Amino acid sequence: MNSNYLQRQPLAGNLIPKPVRVEKGKGPFSLTPKTEIVIPAESPAIGEIGAQLAAILAPLGGTPLKVSVCSGPPPEGSICLNTGSYPQLGAEGYRLEVGPNLVSLSANEPGGLFYGVQTIKQLFSSGPKGGPGLIEGVIIEDFPRFSWRGAMLDVARNFFSVQDVKGFIRYLAAYKFNRLHLHLSNDQGWRIMINSWPNLALHGGSGAVSGGRSGYYSQEEYSEIVAYAQSKQIIVVPEIDLPGHTTAALASYPELNRKGIAPPLYSGTEVGFSSLAPEKDLTYRFVSDVLEELAALTPGPYLHVGGDEALSTTPEEYEIFMSQLQPIVARLGKTMIGWGEIAHTPLQAGTIVQIWRREEIDAKKAAAQGVQVIMSPAYRAYMDMKYNESTKLGLSWAGLIKVEDAYNWDPAEVHALVPQNKILGVEAVLWTETIRTMADLENMVFPRLAGYAEIGWSPRKNRSWEEYRYRLAAHGRSWEKENINFYRCPEVPWGEQV
Ligand code: ACM
Image (cartoon, rainbow, N blue to C red; front, top):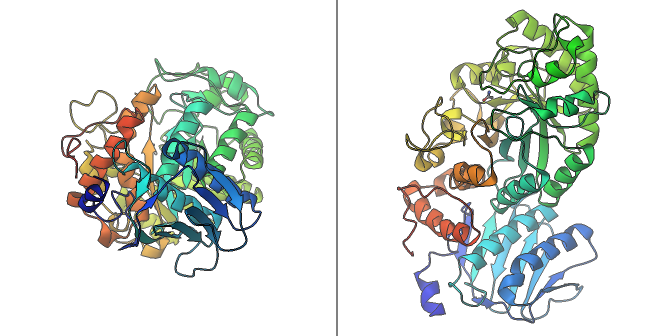
């Protein structure tokens, strides 16, 4: 049964994202109670990845696998992780060779080993149903197309607990994403404790979109999220949305308001009506204090400052605000990211623009300034858009996004004027005006998330919807086992065994 099963499978099963190169190897390899994971020398980073692999394989092997250090040739039947020098693989790539007596995973950096481990996990989970832990012989050489493979979660409209965010991080990690953009503030809520302005969290954190969850992360909790993400090779990109989308802040401190009067907390879903006061010195002290605390808590190199839909500032005021904001971010040693609108003001070299709407205009402006861009075109990459008219959750202002449409586009083709070498990658975005629970989140994110992962990782020439949808169906079977509440779209053959 096992060998028949393996013959019917496409080579290397149903991996998503699809690897760069796959060849037939000498396997199959079977997990046994004696299988060990071996790492080359005492290295905490590799040891941690070995321990994660052991935890992934424990349910398949029957007993927890031992992780041991080995300086000589790896013992028969082991899974061996090692780092070396592989110029073709880059910082995030890996090489995986599955033979009958050895699985050998190699990379330049621990990050590459981590991605190889995700591949091993998928190979085992597409194995025979209920059968032993068995994988076919393959040789895989794999590395990402883009360095930015991100997802954004809006915790401002609807708050998600640390546990929930960790769950989202696990989903991202399984598909080789490497950025989690946390949208930490908006009109409806402020989600991180800032010690120098505590009312932001204490008052601003008590708001939410109507019917949504309120709350905020203590600094310790935020650090816990960041560390958890880091253990899965994901950099957290915190966003404080400025100068618009700021009712939660304005409601917490009257003195930040143009007229010195705090508005009430806001639980609606309109946009563009709130703004910090660009003419006030206090505004910049506030921004500087907030970003300074956030930067100190954030080991990653980025601060996202929003900049979108600042519809109640004039273009002149917006430009003044941005001209004062940029040196603050620079002083903190961080790279500034902002939504497409920031491309309309003069940007310091090194700034990153996240294209979301008005691709034509904003991308052209960004291209003219020579800055790098992240592609999140709303009509393709916004996971809060409904799949079709009968989708219960979500919005539709950017269009309905079928699973096929979420997959069938390319960051390099969003705007012809953006040079290829300025495209950092792709980010899928989840706004939460209509999302409350993890089950809601899962229903909008799955299955589209897997497609964004492949867009970000796999070579363009390897991608085809007709073939991808069968691989996606196999992932549906894994999601079923994990009780993930994914949307069973009609264009994917979920029930068919391939
Ligand atoms: C956005 O969707 N307002 C960036």
